[in-house]
Length: 314
Image (cartoon, rainbow, N blue to C red):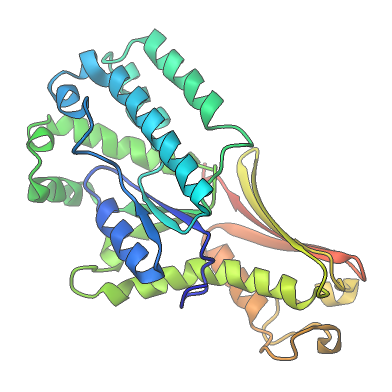
């Protein structure tokens, strides 16, 4: 664990439109958490400059290149054992960039279909490792344009502003329907990395608190030789995080009160006699503030499963 209580094997992915500050936040979070970074390799991309000069000629090549590189990088991070902050997710291209080019005629329908099928076969399977959380950066359209101008990449500055406007709208639609992993939305005006890097602390604390409270609860109410199982999976239009222990369990009467402030399950049955009884109450508040729900299923002397569910926005 680091000072924020986020597991050292976690993978945190940063998403958002071009120019929103993904790379800057990636480095700042990694420094805070003592994590490694995973950056998109722009300088050595053989298709990027060509793409900005001729969308129709190079859009398919660029998307296939990105898919291959991001797949390899995702695989590398998890084989390494996690502990990464990732600049840009593997999920954005198929529903944003590739689909936009297919609809506006700069990628053929056959090319898009080929890319889409390949993406699903490689990524949208139970075997592909998903991030523990995706942080989505939000801002106003004008702020994006200002940032693109400030960083001074000719290939971006010379691109038709209508392209950026369409891209911005597509990102908004995409995140409202994204459900491959839990999402934390973050407005870029809520922190200032350049003037006050500690402004990130409240963001990190929210991410950590949900994970840590549920894990600690599972460990404290398990016996020494029992395991704790953590799983994240998609179910229709929901994303579920489940933490299961095989410990002492919680009675039906106590289950009615465990999310109340200062309530504690009979501490004589816990391996930890400390605590304030606030952990699950705070966890419930954080989950619900992100349009989520938390529940528990438990049987005495068999164990408990806490389930956090995040819903798609219509």
